[in-house]
Length: 257
Ligand code: SAH
Image (cartoon, protein in one colour):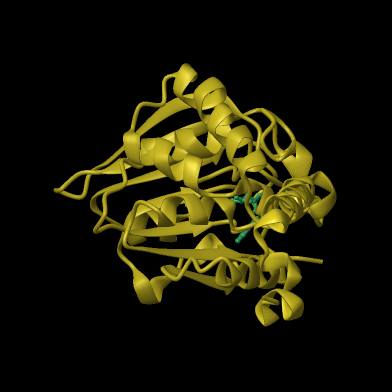
């Protein structure tokens, strides 16, 4: 007897079933290929994740960074989204990269080292001077409760604010202004990180550092090698400074244009 169901839907017939399964599988694998081919051009992906994990192993853990929170944050934050689109394939290289306006996103190892020096904890409130791309703030935000970050170049500050919002870094607040004065409204800070080189430590930053807090700051003349310094304020309010490493940062500036 003629089965009307097979007339209306011939592919449900037993003989067509292998063909149907084969076509569906082919379509699925075509879609998957397309997705993995296009992935490096989109948000995060297996491709970038692999590069990021390799970066942490080879450039960071292998050089002695051992704080698990820092390693986790460096594995989690998609650095390629913080560099200009044309430079995404170099985002996980062992070097700083230009981010426009003559500024740079620091080398991954330096970001990890500065973060580790602060010994950040989950209830800490942190200040960053020199938002740039927003990458250092994003890394820190994965460990502490809140990050306040100040950028003096308005288009960089605005772009970082937008990027951090888009990527849902909700515990970061960006301000455009001169970070020489810190951010009094939210002081004192458990940790302060300065990512531009100054010839002296801005007094306001020492003042806004909490007792028991730590600050990492490159000190020295601009356009030369500087010293990465760790400043610690004891529970009694005493200041101790240590030279950690020769570094090269973009200059701390007091105005833009
Ligand atoms: N932390 C950044 C690195 C940015 S480079 C990142 O992760 O991408 C240093 C930044 O410090 C530059 O964007 C520069 O414009 C900014 N800067 C320099 N002097 C400043 C100041 N007085 N106040 C705030 N930002 C400053």
